[in-house]
Length: 246
Image 1 (cartoon, one colour):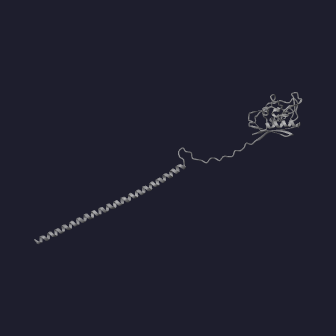
Image 2: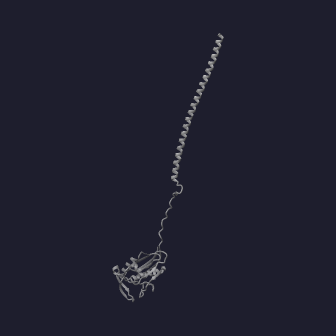
Image 3: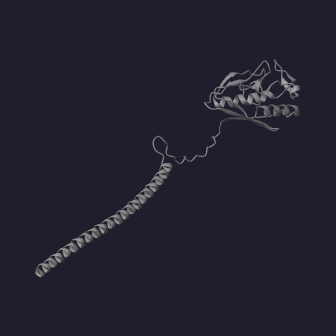
């Protein structure tokens, strides 16, 4: 009976020992599983943080790249936009070179004060006159009426019969004759010209041109191919006409 009790105790002890082993194993397994789960959770959090940081850096880099691209796009036009270029340097405009195509001078033999005054007044109206290429010049239209109302004085001249008389604007035929000779030198086309009734000695024979306002005129056409300007000057001795191509 006592032997049976001892056997039962041994068996019970063995069972209890096995139970402790099983319980220990279970506790160890649970602890190990929880630790692994905790580690996995920490790793996931770390991975999430790393991914978030990486995504943040990526977004930051992308934003920086976008800003740089926007700046580049603003600086470098694309598509149909024209690339700005440096405007060409403007060359200074060279003034046209003037050229005297004819000049003629006559001598004032009759130095009567009124005659010289008439010549000076007419030259002031004539000087600087520009005749366009192809345009016809009229002496009478340029000078205007040659009477005392316009400031001209009576001076010695010729009537239609060659007789010397005092006439308003006496002396102006010397200017028209001087222009006529300059026009001949320049080779321009004379369209109206009248000789004096008597020879005058301030120009060569048959190279004179008389004028009477409203009746007799001296005209020519500018056939030089360029505009020309009349430079008319005088003193008490000479009358000078230049035809200048401009």
